[in-house]
Image (cartoon, rainbow, N blue to C red; front, side, top):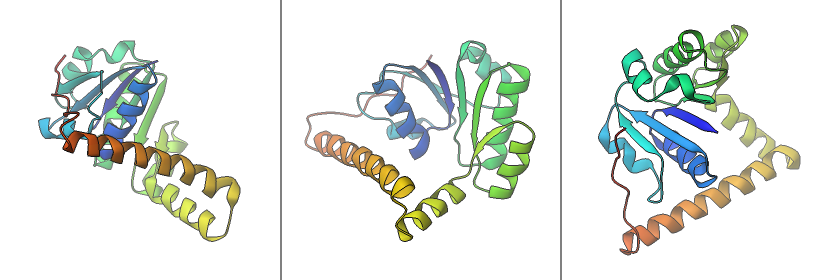
Length: 171
């Protein structure tokens, strides 16, 4: 799958690493070069320094050829704008926007946008674990802890000089 991610914070960098490790083609865009440090050392995708709501930047990174577009910046407005541009202007069929405000997430979801609110996801997960819901809580926590352990191992190897962070690559 060819995936374009806007926002290389912790979520974007983590997801880009997962998808890249699975063999997907990943391009990640961010406004700040230091953000690319969130990518795993083995990241083999493409990084691009630019604004993910800028039509020219999106054209340069091939938004018209992607199978999926994920807006994962820190700002709800930026994510919703980038997602709308990808969906409505470039016709990307699978578009996701991280939205912290659950009310805004629902409003855009009602308009056909796929939104993910970590506020409600995390709250629902914690509630499930607290209530002993093994169907939801345990499976997700097992996957989460496995991913966190892998990230910690990679970080430890990097600090020991056995691996180094990958430099930001530009398209």
